[in-house]
Image 1: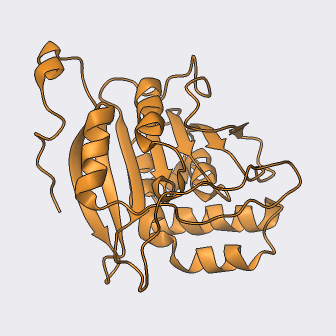
Image 2: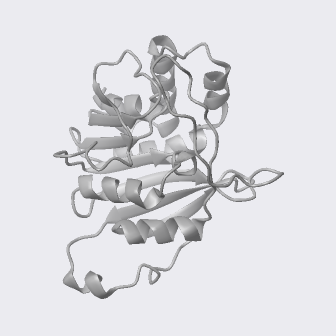
Length: 237
């Protein structure tokens, strides 16, 4: 696993995808085959951030879905905790897979992480996303990085998703998976700052700019921030 820290992110991604394909209970789904075609857009920059961490770092993966990024982080020698509301873990014991809701303030109680990932999750939240982002911030060490991605409004033709409730999840049922709301880079940055993060950059993903990636860090302790408006940070696109 150690040699992967120097591999190209695409190589780490392909190795992780192969493990998910071999060990996930959902590997035969058409949605997994579709996911493999395009999720390098956000996975590769996140894997590059994972490669920059010291081996043995504690990584939080929020809404891991099929688990590709979680597996990739373990291949790079990190200790991974994943918080997933709907799907079961792949058969990969190196991941601590928590079945829970990231909007629950107790789901990460007592844990501390060196980096957090939140890929393609924000748009699915049916409650105030600030709750989820604050829970992530609470679990991160001061100064720890937080990377995430989400579709940009206007990514697809037709009416935009708007807020609504998903059906309650129950064991043995497939959850209804739909976009509840799309967030612009400016809206995302405002949420991150209000949750306790410094926004370092936001980057468009893909030729059509259908998604954006954020790079943020949990605030270092600074008493002056108590008087700082969450609207003060400039967004870099």
